[in-house]
Length: 182
Image 1 (cartoon, rainbow, N blue to C red):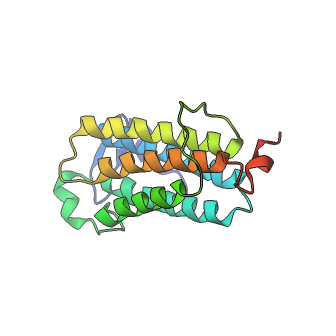
Image 2: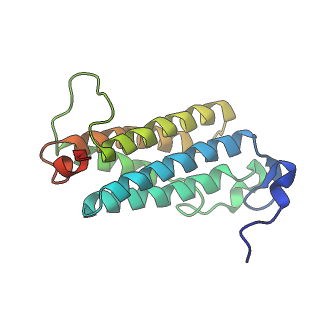
């Protein structure tokens, strides 16, 4: 199987369950931003080698984002073909993000002032992912995806990524000192 198909040479891309749209169409812009965020989460995971808890959380988020991107890449008339948790964002996925936020905020003291990103490579990568998720969230608002939890998921995900970045900056975190080394 080849990685290239040449089908996109005309400026269009295929959607899940069929159909093609321009590469600058709203859903493709959303998925582009989500793809960037997913890569930044991967960078954070790579910088945090040895931190099993961070790796587990990052991998779960990266997999969830595949689900979200599948939903976004589906035409409204094909929504009935989506499978909850496989190609459709579920309430449980959103609730899982909230549970992770609640659990992590117990691990550090919440900042009382604005935070400057860049304390270490892990937290900086998570902050890049957060800002990219915020862009995707803004694009979802303009796309009018009624009946979808994609917007709620992205909103909670940006909160979780902010929380994860602060968690990774904390002195109590075993990799915090190591992650700040050049």
